[in-house]
Amino acid sequence: VIWQPTPTGRSPLDMGPQLGRQAAIDIGIGVLLAWVLSLIPGGFGQRVGAALATGVLVSLATHVPYWNWYRYPGDWLMGQLIEVVVGLLLTGVVAAWWLGRGRR
Figure 1 (tube, rainbow, N blue to C red):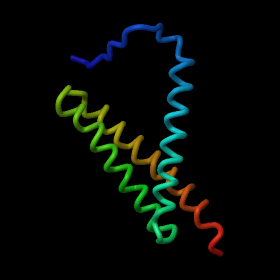
Figure 2 (figure 1 turned 135 degrees about the vertical axis):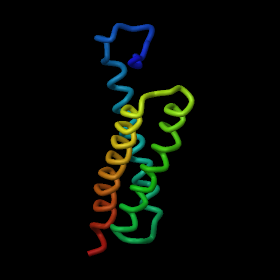
Figure 3 (figure 1 turned 90 degrees about the vertical axis):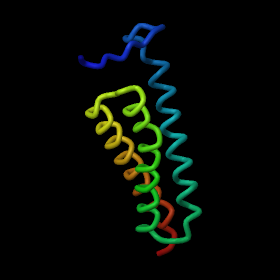
């Protein structure tokens, strides 16, 4: 049996409000991550490492329970883990670079 999400409410073609909300959420997460990284006294490497650790922890805490309790497929889980970890890692690289540019 292939798992199929069953959203209710709006037409799947009416994604405008959802895209706007998701963009705001992602920007907010990026700003919060940059703020957390700004609190780290280390340099670029330590900040990128912290962003990577944050991505791993957030992804494990939010997506593994869906796999465990709601039986989401393993492929879905791996995709989510990769998306969140890589996304926060890239955000962390940019934020660490931005925060460290005044040190030279």
